Image (tube, rainbow, N blue to C red; front, side):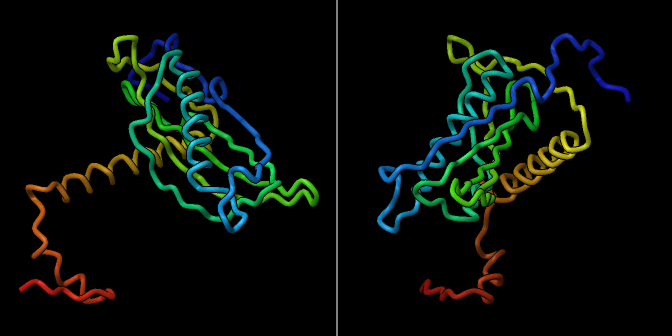
Length: 188
């Protein structure tokens, strides 16, 4: 397989920056319904994304965007939450960190998938300027699939930004779509 860059010295394997954290969910992080706050889980996800991206780039990283945060299953007080993070994609100065969140009932051993998300992180130097990140060595089909899915998500984001730029967007072109929704347009 050919690659644009033949110098492998500034490339890292996905496993080199993979991070796994586990934390027992405490009542102090729950809402009035006894479920763990989504905001608390997002905070943990941001921390693991930072750790994973910083480990890969060997520099400080900032969160540029978060893509597809879907809370699939609630997390209960007393469950052990495990987050797994890996670099799924690298650009010039950015990385996409894929994160999987699972909760385990420690009495029964039952594990449920609670969330998967993608954090785009950007490497920064001491002056706050973006810096180049190492390339990525893909060692198996799953790593290749994750990288290719990131390329597709990036393409879709670019198309969405282009279509919905404020100066180019005209709601009149989309009003017919509203007919299928529970909405009334009441513009005089």
